[in-house]
Amino acid sequence: MSKIKLEYIWLDGYTPLAGLRSKTKIIDGDVASLTLADLPMWGFDGSSTKQAEGKSSDCLLKPVGLFRDCTRTNAFLVMSEVLLPDGSPHPSNARATVAEDPDTWFGFEQEYFFYQDGRPLGFPENGYPAPQGPYYTGVGYSSVGCVAREIVEKHIDICLAANINIEGVNAEVAKGQWEFQIFGKGSKSAADEMWVARYIMMRLCESYGIDVEWRCKPIRGAFDTPLDWNGSGMHANFSTKHLREVGGKAYFEKLMAAFSKHMDEHIAVYGPENHLRLTGLHETQSIDKFTYGLADRGASIRVPHSFVNSGYKGYLEDRRPNSAADPYLVAGRIIKTIHSVPTN
Ligand code: ADP
Ligand code: MN
Ligand code: MN
Ligand code: MN
Ligand code: MN
Image 1 (cartoon, protein in one colour):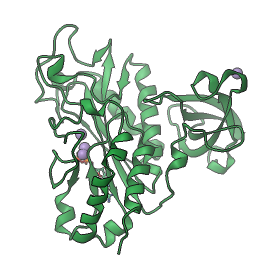
Image 2 (cartoon, protein in one colour):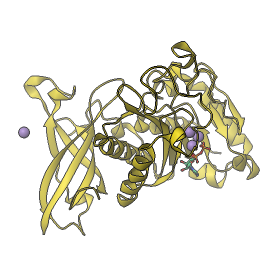
Image 3 (spheres, protein in one colour):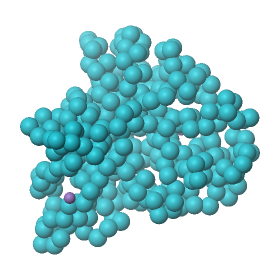
Image 4 (cartoon, protein in one colour):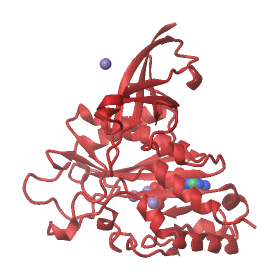
């Protein structure tokens, strides 16, 4: 037995951008054998997080994911759902609305900006850096600056130690912009791990005096700068057992028809301010159009070459979700549309 630090993490009630919150609980336990089932329910003051009125402010925290935290001794990160005092899901609890589906897999590509002193890391105090071009997958101080890569590397290692399925990272198109990818099998696991990976990134940046800007269009390109700057997405790659093992052109076309029909419901949960990003420029489709296309980065859904070459089998990439979107809502909506299409 030893003292174990549990950092309970949850999403607050702020809209349209929910914030991450956390606090530490110390329990007696065995680090080597601790499992989710060993974790107690906990609570917090919902009146301070826009999740309750002052007079009856208790909200409950239900542990739903356990991740080793290598940055502290004997410590774990505990992803939690927020419940009302009667044990039912709080209205802000999007995770509870996602259908259980172990055969659906998601891979999210999280883009974001590092921010310091109110501007992207590496932007000069006045004016703008050299135009986009060398930054994407770039190397060298003038492309990626001096601390960004150090943070990104530490983030990878903390995620891997936590058993988070981080699949890769890259410097992105705008200066100060980066990406990491998280993959998970099952309707909720990639989204759970995405929220924990976001938490890890934000906490890691504290000691550098850097913030993470998740909003999708922090620099509005030609509108308020002389140059164009990319926005940030969270492309949602998805596959189901049927898509991976059976697929076929007829099923694929029915599926795309359903995505087209439900365009507005998808856009509604694909992140705030997305009209600023989905303009038809910068490898996006316009927010009011639904298209799909082979290897087409200007389409709403990109169909990988591998998908067509294997007989319309494999995964698809919905390019519309943005960097600030809630991956629970994105996964939940994609599953809903998939479930509306019969597989025979
Ligand atoms: P790109 O930048 O070219 O769009 P990335 O390599 O950044 O591609 O991201 C591809 C994503 O696709 C990864 O997150 C990966 O996990 C995901 N992916 C690969 N295969 C599948 C699959 N069968 N189902 C769901 N997601 C998948
Ligand atoms: Mn207290
Ligand atoms: Mn990518
Ligand atoms: Mn990208
Ligand atoms: Mn992509």
